[in-house]
Each structure stands twice: as structure tokens, then as C-alpha cells.
Image 1 (cartoon, rainbow, N blue to C red):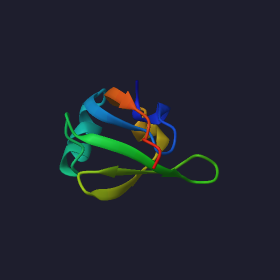
Image 2 (image 1 turned 30 degrees about the vertical axis):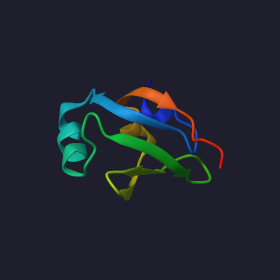
Image 3 (image 1 turned 90 degrees about the vertical axis):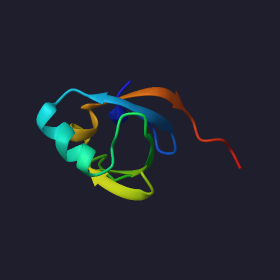
Image 4 (image 1 turned 90 degrees about the horizontal axis):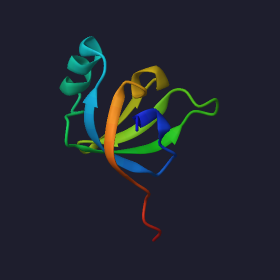
Length: 79
């Protein structure tokens, strides 16, 4: 599964990347393998998206999100 496949509120754990140039940029922003990431919002047309990772909110394009592989995908628990 990829980050771009999540629906708003869903979470996953970063497993890796499929773009070595982008991976360095993402690693510097706290998107480390093993880190939980949650899709917190989408723009009206679906791009860009907002994710919560490493204690902060990060905006990225869907093209970038498609290059992030996830494991342990799960939905947000109802409150």
C-alpha cells in the first residue's frame, strides 16, 4: 500500500520509498521508515494532501505520496 491510497483519517507505518532522490528529502522532514503517518486532509481537488508525521503537519503532492510505501495500514478509531 502507498500513502496516496489512504483515506482522510487513516494511518499507516512508513515501510520505504521508491525514489532515491525524494527519499532523502522525506527523511530530512521526519518521514523515517517505521514512523507512523496519518492522512489528515486533502485539498478540494485531492492534491496536495496534509499528513501528520513525527509530531507535525506536512503538506505534499500526491505524486510524492505515491512514492511512499506503507505497512500496518489501519483506520482511525471512532471516539
